Figure 1 (cartoon, rainbow, N blue to C red):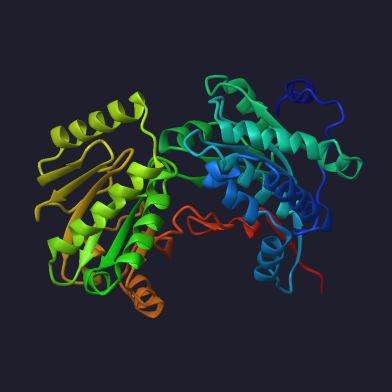
Figure 2: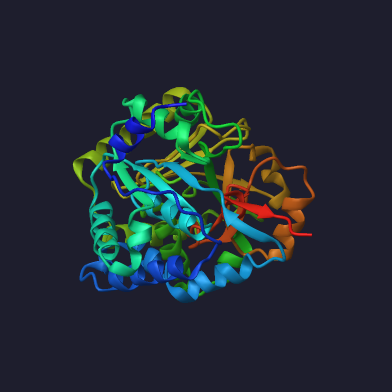
Length: 397
């Protein structure tokens, strides 16, 4: 076990104490509610769709619904100290991880990315303001946000040696490196590894949409894909079109998406270079592409041929999508591996999706949501019920 003096020196908070609560305790719910209210007052909120969603997600109404969803007859308490290692590709991830830790009744050490972003700055300023309120003194002294370079493995090793659980968000390499550090025997790891996501669209239903509804669907797809530049694991890279092939309606969808991107998204030089480099890399590595349609720098759409079977490592960037026509939903089975996380859909009934996902021996797809909801984060993530995983059951007989 590591030296406690080193542990507290790294934290730089002599008042830090590990506190354990019941999940969805009143103080933590009020903390999230205050966060939501303060975030709502930010004057440029409309420029940050991910912060708008975060504002609604952390509202009292939403949290109460989550509490209701987690009601059971078991007695639960938080596990203790949770060490969260958060990624750089999703700027808001660290605050969701913190909130999961709080709602499950724990104290938390949050390692945030050293990369700067406007969203990160806004969130940290709000958290600091709320922590100053006297009523949240116990939370201030039992939760730490820390920033250090990944290469500083000593900090990670020390935090690991004192934690009751680690929540590791990141690539497979990051997870395997962190797993080398010892954790106490009763501690657990929850890991969120490399994943990819896809969309499936019923062409017949798409063709029957009015122009206005087609524009609405395209806008929803835009938010799923462009909000995080396709860097989030739940952003779509592949689009499967089911039913009778109809290039006319498919192209109409892409043209509407292009119009939205033209209006809403600003490409800087880095976006453009990375996008083109990613495309060339995919062309060099794979020989499964038939045609590439470029809508200026806004949108690349690549047709794949029938030779393709594995799509785990075919990823888009900054608005690059791969598409394939299939006869029906069941044909996507061969493209679903353990790495497949989110299936966004249009034109399918929930019962149809439920039957497909539960009766085809699939090892992937942990969530299926309508197009427009890909980035919605939930305490049930990657197949884990995070609130339950980070709390322990007390049996009273």
